[in-house]
Amino acid sequence: MEIDVKRKQGNFSIDVAFEGNPSGVTALFGSSGAGKTSVVNMVAGLSKPDAGRVAIGGRVLFDAKHHINLPPEKRRIGYVFQDGRLLPHLSVKRNLTYGMNLTPLNQRYVKFEQVVELLGIGHLLDRRPARLSGGEKQRVAIGRALLTSPALLLMDEPLASLDADRKNEVLPFITRLSREFSIPILYVTHAVDEILQLAGRVVILENGRVLATGLTEDIMGRPELSVTWGNGTPVFPSSAYVGFPLDGRCHFVKGCYHEHAQAVDTEGNGQFHP
Amino acid sequence: MPGLTSMEWEALRLSLRISFWAVAVSMPFGILVAWILARLRFPGKSIFDGIVHLPLVLPPVVTGYVLLVLFGRKGPLGAFLQDHLGVTLAFNWKGAALAAAVMAFPLLVRAVRLSMESVDQELEAAARTLGAGPLRVFFTVTLPLVAPGIISGLILAFARSLGEFGATITFVSNIPGETRTLPLALYTLTQMPDGETGAMRLCLLSVGVAMIAMVLSEMAARRFSRQLKG
Image (cartoon, rainbow over the protein chains, first blue to last red):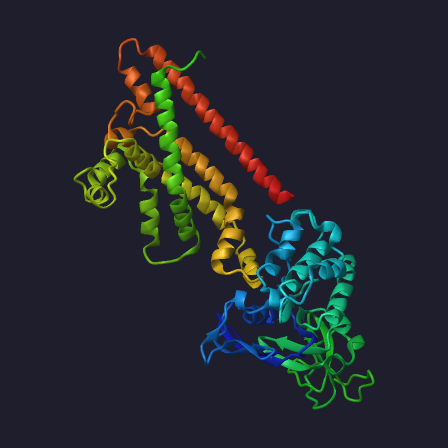
């Protein structure tokens, strides 16, 4: 997975490049307004980057230099939207098979029964989306994207619209999903706990730029050490745990510099020196 | 009400036939124009919008006269249709259907356009990511979601066509069995001595047809909304 996209929208510009694992979950992490959804939409082909290149598993989906820009329906990318976006006029079953039936037989590697069983949605098949709970909707949306046998699965804050209980209902399915199918997943979130449970790699975005990228255990080294940031003087260590503000909290990233850094744990022992 | 006279049957059948064809032929164009107005931006769009809505604000007689000038046997479009397709519209029921279609068109477009503007375009984007091309998305997502708007537009247009008078009588005149629809027959009776009973019967007939159309549209609308709610 190779993603390099640049785009100007109004006075906000996005310039993001990173590589993801060929399988497993890569998390795209950042506060709201960091440009996460814009990046994912460009990967899916729903908006066009001004420049850059997107390739999944060696297949080029977008390349500004060579004027390659596949339309979304040719990209073989499954997209799970934050709000589900199930087709309201179709039953759950027909939502699930909508994309599956459009996938050529020789490209299908995900089986209907397998997905229904994995996501536990067998009893919902005849219902309309309007009669599903939030958690059920999200499971159906995941199944629908999965059944297109995608080369990459995009998940844009699939749990953000759910309360804690529903979240705990869906999260295990995503964990199983990444284990049972060897599909790379690009998972957008602003919740640290989801990253710790799911992601092998993390890409941190801020203001349309990549702030840091690396293995989850390196990047999110000390998530338990979150503190509220104050107005102290920024300090710039080269290799230390640095706190930077996201969603009004401090999260800790190892070995990266950030201009908003407020406190530094130079020994990595949880002691902060402003 | 006692059985209909053959003259009443004739007017009723003619009215239904003219309205049916007026609505059936204008439906695809109405949906296309509604889509253009709802989704596209282009220079001159407000002029296009104005032309589409013109029959709604013009006196029907003016519309009928314009049709006569354009589609009469000697008119530019009328001569073209006559020479190339062998179709004559002047002074026959096809011309009456054209007049009804033109008069009803803005109502059809308005209803479909409103419905189309309320369709969540994000749903269409979602269908694209599932592998459907733009045309398939239009037929499997957009159209089903605007179906209630299309149905109410069709009923409105059908009702407007049944009631068409001014443009029809100007364009295709008042020919028994050919262009004398219910309103024209009613008008004719009011111009004749002892026509009151016949006029009242046609009046009641028109009310009956309108009621049936309303009930059918209500039933269709309810069926669709039930379908969306599961």
